Amino acid sequence: MQNNFWQDIVKRAYDMDRPLFILAPMADVTDCVFRELIAKYSKFGTKESLLDVFWTEFVSADGLCSPVREVLKRDLVYSDKEHPIVAQLFGSNVENMRNASKLCAELGFDGIDINMGCPDKSIEKQGAGAAMMKNPENARAIIRAAYDGARDAKKEIPISVKTRIGYNKIEYKTWLEEILKEPITTLIIHFRTRKEMSLVPAHWELAREIIDYVHSLRPDLIIIGNGDVLDITDGIKKYKETGIDGVMIGRGIFGKPWLFNAIGFEPTLKQKFEILIEHTHNFEKTLGDSLIRIINSDGRITEKVVPGKSFAIMKKHYKAYINGFTGAKEFREKMMQCNNATEVEKILREFIKENFVL
Image (tube, rainbow, N blue to C red; front, side):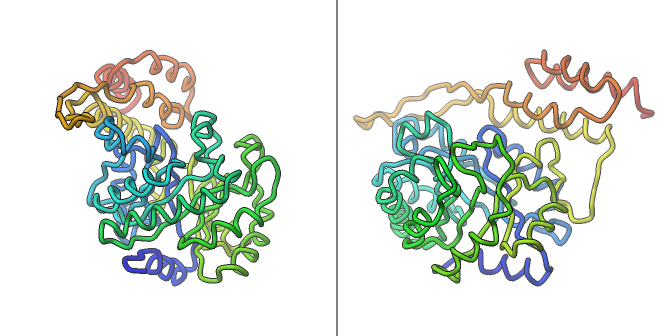
């Protein structure tokens, strides 16, 4: 397959005796603003970075084929500094998946990933996410549609699938056997069932068994593990123990955009607060209200001011940034009352002034 970036980065990681390190897709977390900070502070694209691939938040294929597609395309914004980057899509409509995949290829993404593991009920009601595991026939059709969509854009970029080890119980063989018949180059496995959500420890004890099974069917397939990978050290440990090709880090990145920095950069509390101020202002500027053009079903074009993402999304990061010092809990509670970046900066600047020598 042409333009398969996976081959090059796997070889590079193997030469360094380490796993591939992948940024997990997390809704309302790994947006373009946070990814930009990760690229900056993890020195992405240099020898000082251990990060190999960026992943977008997941985006609805149906939505990208609807009149509100211009709104959803904000979730597909990325910078030139983020290559390679994979666009993650979800959906159960074959035609829409093909068209959405074509769009992602045209936007210059290096790969397309299909979410077949999300346990959110609203996603499953659409027959997407983890519900795909209950409909292998449609799942296969969706993979082919993504592949064909990229080819429609005259690009053959790699298609991957992110899934789980079962729906109600650990039962991965029949499911994986089906989807591995399709032209995917990479498989990302969350080592929990859909029923388990994230309520139990990930079943990394099954990793080697699952890897052996997958390679018995597809020796060439790249396998990425997901679930409870805490940090770089933990990722390397899991790689050594299981032989997996790579690990995907999700919750471990919260409040730590420098996590993948190979030289072990660990900011001071003052530096963390400066990064948080930067993060908050960038979020408000980039993902705030915007004027968009909407193409109606009759072809008419109208302009509309679309409310940006809720500022409350930023508050998910505060607990991760603000910890490790006396009074952190009370300070976080104060931060939770903020409604915009100006208020956040004011409070943080006051704290810095009172507690650090400038």
